Amino acid sequence: MKRILDALNVPWMAFGGTCLALIAVLAFCYQSGVKAAREINLITVDRDSIARWADVTCALTGKVYRAPGMKRQEWGRACQSEIQALADFRRNTTETTNTAMANHLKTQVEQAAADLAAARRANEQTARALKRMEAADASVKDDHVGGDWFGALNELGGLRAPGS
Amino acid sequence: MALSTSLGACAHRAPKLETPVHTQVIAVPLKETPPADLMVCAQRPDGFPEDLVATMPLGIRDAAKRVMKALKDDADRLDRWVNYHAPGSCPAPNPTSP
Image (tube, rainbow over all chains, first blue to last red; front, side, top):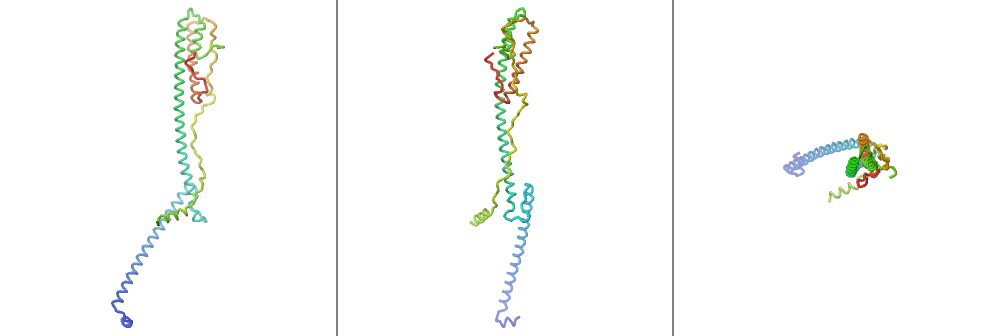
């Protein structure tokens, strides 16, 4: 070796330095390669995990994420549409339910208010009829009753005399 | 710049969404519909003739008053019930007329 180097007129120290530098470069490349391989492995694991998640999630919607023979661009399209439809369905249902319940509540409030007014009118009518009946009773003599008494009785029953 | 370029590329490749297949809505308007025979207005037949006279002991007069008041109370309540579910269906009691 020394003779070869002497023949080539290369200094011994320069050859040694070159070899060391070459070894350092090779070591660096090896380390980088190992690191890259590890990262690629991690990426593969992540991708497989996400793909499994997509398969399971899409199966819940009743659509497949991917199927044999399906183009890669088509993966998840039907599933995404289904998820969109389900999200729309939930939002629409919630909105419509809230509207229906609010309208029902409003209707009930209006019905109750109208009924309260009707109940008050009926009570006033009955109170006035009772007062008239009392007066008519007070004017009865010898158990003889006539038009006034029957009129008061009809009003008490909310009825009208025949032909009136 | 690099980000917008890559995002633009993604957008270009993003699958186009189809129209949602089902958009039916479960919520329905709430409506209470009582049985039809409960939605008939109260009967209010003609009362006693007011152009005749009679002799009625106190017991009979009191009984007639009880019956007539109960008749009116129940008839008013039934009409209110019908009007509650179908406003304006039955004549409303009018306190200003006998």
